[in-house]
Image (tube, rainbow, N blue to C red):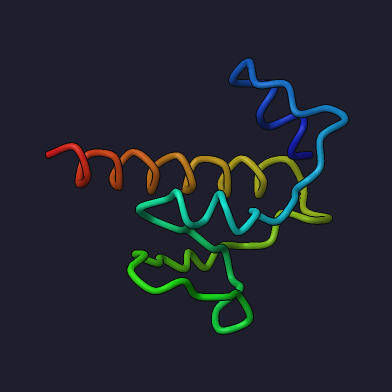
Length: 85
């Protein structure tokens, strides 16, 4: 369903799978966003962490996955506005 939901926006994730960020990627970041990992994720000093609790799209129907997609989009846009202002 994630493939279908993102394809509606012209984003092709077919054949892709989620992966953990490398230590180097986290160290190069100003903001680290996790999605429901809470205390299970490693923490690097000096980084801003946001844990976005979202509905897990796994096994959900297309309308639910669209809602998750749209919520992530809304939060990313709000964060960009905050960072760039």
